Amino acid sequence: MKNALIAAALTVACCGQAAMAADGPYLDDRSSPEAVVRSLYNAIDRHDYARAWSYFGEVKPAKDFDSFAKGYENTDSIELRVGSISEEGAAGSIYYGVPVAILATDKKGEQRVFAGCYTLRQVNADQEPPFNPIHIDKGELKPSTAALDEAVPESCGDGPPPPKKDAVLEQAKKAFLTAYGDQCDKETPEHKPISEPAAYSIHYKDKDAAEGEPDREARLFRFYCHMAAYNESAVYYVADAVTGVRQLQFAVPELDIRYENDDHEGKVDSITVTGFQTEDTAINSAYDEATRTISTHALWRGVGDASSAGTYLFRNGRFALVQYDVDASYDGEANPETVVDYNTPP
Image 1 (cartoon, rainbow, N blue to C red):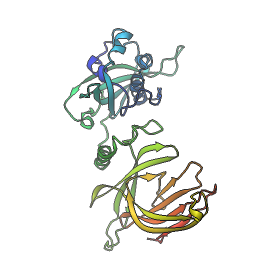
Image 2 (cartoon, rainbow, N blue to C red):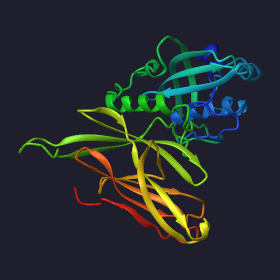
Image 3 (cartoon, one colour):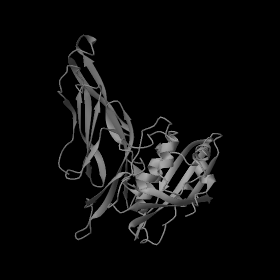
Image 4 (cartoon, helix red, strand yellow):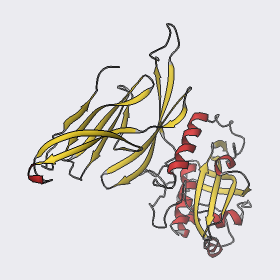
């Protein structure tokens, strides 16, 4: 079978959902067709060309390994998008069609978009050694004039039509990537793209709703952003039919903390709230669907004996700060003090 993966696309392919440094996380996952494609780009980005070569089956993407490796000498970075995967069984194997689009940046900073399909093959599990894992059977990528997100083919092969895109989710993803795509990590600690958020649906009654008026719906999206030492940051977006998609800003009290003998390692003398400010990221946060609250817990140092924690309650269509606790003593113990308390039922 002739491999149709064009040399131009291979020359610019590199890493995964987004650009990673050459010493980025090692990813060798052959558990699914999408994982194989992501692992291929991870190997190329790390210059593990022998591993990249191994993801292809009998038909290789170049005439020999040296030509394959040389094709990447001008590659700097790439972003990858994967579409809806199709599946078809035939003659003891399962074939997968994987739509992809890549935004490739060369070492001169020039960018090009390529799009097309990979065909991957999974031989049935009843095999004799040596075992043949899921592998790339062939591929074809061509230059595209579309933007990266719009360039992904709707489908590959004769599988079922892809699910209809979630327009609100796509708006939230676009807003996040536009504002934070260059600031946040390129993938989560689980090697998933940061552009795929945790999503929640909140149904509620508006406080001014007339009797019999149907519930309203708000949607909440939590995007992972960054991990630094012992604190993880996330960015939240909320959407509804009235205001559309908007980023959540978190109210945080400004504090005047006084210590006995002006010793920050000593006993806390007083904590005074002097005002409020907003922050656009939430630290060590989580959303609780049962209580409709977003909680944050910022550690001031690794041992966790000094910290601040906020509780933000969803009511009347918005999230509001209802409680803020501060543990300002560096005494080796967790003994927070509540400095803001509006934690009343909605």
